[in-house]
Structures are given as C-alpha cells and as structure tokens.
Length: 369
Figure 1 (cartoon, helix red, strand yellow):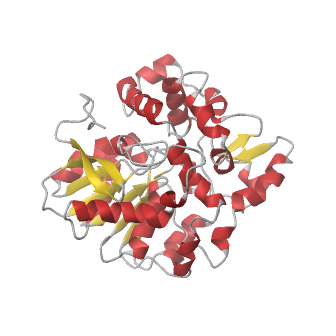
Figure 2: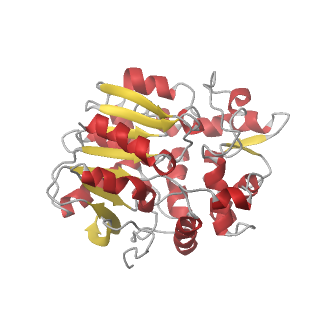
C-alpha cells in the first residue's frame, strides 16, 4: 500500500507506511519535528488519520511531534483480516493498545506527551493511559466519555443486546446502532449504499454534525428503551432500516453542501475512496468485540482509575457526549484520578476536531501546557 498522496493533505503533513507494527504495515500521518514531545492522535469510526488534518499543523507549530495512524481495520494500514468471520482477538482493546505501543517502539519513542482519542479512538486512548501510564503521560478524550474499565463479569455482557427486545417492542420499533454494526449484513449495507458511498458519507457526517438542526443535546435519565429512543436515529435506528437508509432522510441540500467549509466535497471524496477500497468490516469488528467477551481481560483493571492528567473535549451539539447515560459524570468523578476539566465547544457536533479545529486546538494546548 502506498502512502496517502493528495493535494487536500495540508502542506507540512507527511504520509508514510511504517512496517512491522504488531503484524501490521501501519499508515501514519505526521507533522512537526521528530525528537519533540510526541502527541498520538487516534481516530474513530468511520474516520481515518485524515480526520485530524485540521489540527495537526497547529499542534506541531506549538512544539509537538504529531502522529496520527490509520488504526487496525482502517485506511491504508494493512495486515488485518477483512472477513466477518475473522478472529476478533486482534481487534480486542488490549491488542489495539499493543498496536500503538509497537508503533511507538518502531518510531523509537519511549513515551508520548499525550494520547488523544476521538469517537471509538477515545476508549482506546483511555485504556492506553489506564494500562501504561508510564508511556502515555496525559490523555485527552473526545466525543465519547470513558466511564471506567469493565467490572468483574461485565465484559461478558452486552447491555445493547440486553435492551434490544425492549427497543423493538416500542410503538415505533427501534434498534441500537451498536447491535446493527455487529450484524453480518452491516458491511454489505454500507458498501452497497443505494445513494453511493460519497452521498452516504455526506449524509452520515451531516446528520451527526452541529449543522443538523435536530442535534439539541440533553442528558438521558437512564438506560431504558424509552430514554434511548430519544436519541437521533443515527444512534437508535428504526428497526427496519439500514444505516444508509437512516441517514438518507437527512441528506443536506446542494447549497448547504457547497457551503460546508469543514468538509469539502474533495475531502469527503477521500473518505468515500478509502472505504470503497477497504470496506467497513475492520471498523465494524471493533463493535463486534462488545458482544463476544473479547475484552474480558480488561476486567483485571476493574476499579482502577486513569492516574495521568485527563480531559474531555466534545461539542455542545454532540449526542456522543450523552448517548451513554451517566458516562460523562462517571468519567469526571470516578474514572479519572487527575481530572483537568470538560470542554464543550459551542455549536460543534460529533466531528469536533473537523468542525471546530481552532477551538479544539485551543482546548488541547491549554491542557497540554
């Protein structure tokens, strides 16, 4: 696989393939001089290292060596199995931590000044800091709060599966997107999106952004079907619909697409092109581990707290902040021993580092210094 060569990659961001990383040839974007304090940026789903393009140079200009890999299952990183029936153990959280440790070892970086994770990259970053605080000296979590490691016996349960019957029995039958993403048809549904991959990504990113008028966020009262049904359909879907059908209802008009400066049509095309080549199964396998007990080893850390300085950044219009009732409060009060504050960026939706990069960089630099 070749490095990413695109005129849309900001000048000063370097792309390369790093071989021999825990069985992977890992695609990495970098900015800033080697030898400086390192920042490790971990993307989520359905994202790429490219998702950090707006913040990498400002962070590098502040004196950091910024590293953003395509994680296992994504983009130009190779060496992972694309099949639904693949062994899920390589996608377990402890092995995703191992990926990052192996990358740092290959780059001859003994420790990073901070690990920063967005969306599904947030629990990876959180567990990196929990398990190896000697390597990951600070942690910034974005859009997905970390409520702590699983309690004894919890990793063998799937709360989303437990609520599935109640969601399906609602007057408007629903299903949780985690459950849907874990099913065999999900990858095929996404790849064969009737509107085409480019339009699917546009609708999906718009639906979860601060631009979508329905993202008026408030705390949910508890983990019940009735409360979860208050979430937008990109999280709690209509039972009979696929995700492409779900987001197609919210496709923005052409004028709004043309006016979207944080995600141009050219940038959107990169996501569509990369996922057309790899499919979605690699990222979907991360969701599947939540239903199989694959992360049961993490119960060894039950009750442990992140000891290094920690912060959270999200958008005021990001339902990811509130989609798991109680998680935000648990992160702020019990999961982290050295809590440095919650920053909710006004007007930003789920893609905070892409929608509001200046505010994101400002919050990060305040924390990092």
